[in-house]
Image 1 (cartoon, rainbow, N blue to C red):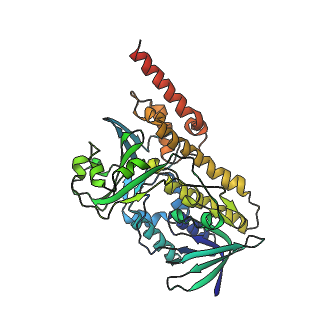
Image 2 (cartoon, rainbow, N blue to C red; image 1 turned 180 degrees about the vertical axis):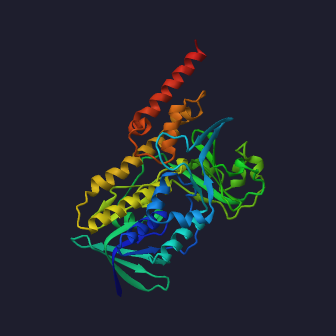
Length: 412
């Protein structure tokens, strides 16, 4: 069996793996990327957050993405029972990017990998990780099967596991644990959006809230296609037996627009999607993106956590490569989990109804809205924002006050 030696092996060529590889390549660190799939390939996670634009920029990938012409996302719209809550990323508490993209991931990920290859990064598609072992120093030996079913070994000082739903190292090393996020499932497809309205309405990413647990997403792309899907409790999703056409009639706002449209592919269902792990790093490896934590998609945090964790991991590997000490617990695990915990609070409080109370209460408090908008834009490490610093109490406390005031008005 042949052997290859590199400084870093990256597992997975999605946004997380590409950001890690892009940054490491800029630092002159030898890197090999292995990817089980053949690109371009479909994957869900099509709505980005402004925070991740900084990551693509630092990894040297922003220019190629900008040239492609993806649909610009300047905010997000949430609607429930006729009340609309619009969040504009230019009106947020934390300074930073005011826009991002809505992307067909097949195209988006393909642009990233082509740009890396143009920079000389070795990406091996249709290569599957079979086994991995680590010596006392953390040097890894990874057995890989290529597309011709030949086996080879990659020896590396570090492994960055960005394998997403494949969760390679969590599976091989027994790191999975149950998520604390309520169990929900999703069903989705793409459609040719032949009834798309002209102007801004036709480009808006929208979350149509049917009830506390159930919501419908609409993500328009610049190529005329649109991603549509439902999230709900698993038994609710299963009750429709994959009949997404019937489910579309639940949305009063979008029923006519998507009535009778052709699906680009049979609806895909992902059940109980939230995942967690016992640890984010070990001697010789680090988990990034969905390989580490995957939360409910209601706030589109997936790609942002993927790229945030990838860039942080790559920077720490580069630091260690220079012979500097790295405190992986403090500098990586604690840091990443701080952001995960903030978003986890928002997901949990969404499904308790507390956050929905804040979103749809009228009149709107503009200071509160700016602070929440910064969270929705991905700036979940900014402790100057009360909705970050006190995330574990502020949402429920404010929702409680709103409901008390409403009760007092109803019962003077």
